Length: 263
Image (tube, rainbow, N blue to C red; front, side, top):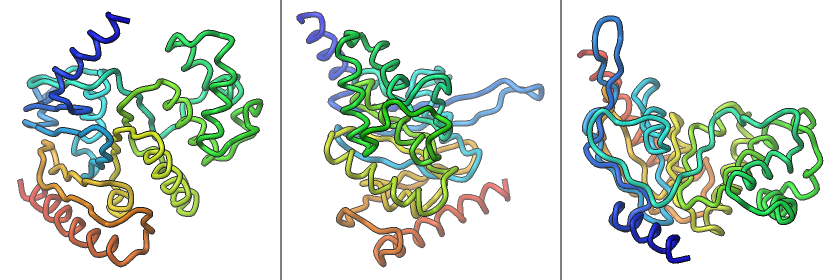
């Protein structure tokens, strides 16, 4: 217990009380032509319980930054600290097809050290949280695309992380299913008080979901602009306030793309 408390204190000290602290982070990759700078001097905090969307044109380094925060790669410069180990959810559900929905979630619980006798009950609870009660025994091929992403979300929540990283998790879904899952994610976020860093290239999705929208410039990715979204939740994609802010952000995004084209 003392060790756990010490680790929590160390984590809080490293992040300055933030869910994530990204300080002056740059990332370069080696290419046949030499080093290519993908991210340049990114500084960004995610507060406890905050929902932040990371927006930018394709190739601007959004997913690279998320991978760095997840610890899947190391920055070339700068530092990243998170409050505990983040959970990561991808565009592809990445479920194991030979396992049932429930067993996919139990695998995450097993890796977290949850005792075997407690796993099924916890998996059932998580399926209920994403409104898939009764789907424990269903195989992946029996689930729709939206249902698979709900299971993937339940599995991510099963990691009991304070910070959830989401890399365009709804991009492959049809518009109606995506809209429904936006509402579900907003509900779950409110119920769990998670911190979320959500990558998207869809401006209206960013505005509908987030408390704060961060725009990255085209490569190399830099923080170009931030918006605080104070539109009350729940929001609808067609709401006038959502549309108005989306237009403003889109114009800024177009400017970044045009600027990149002239470089």
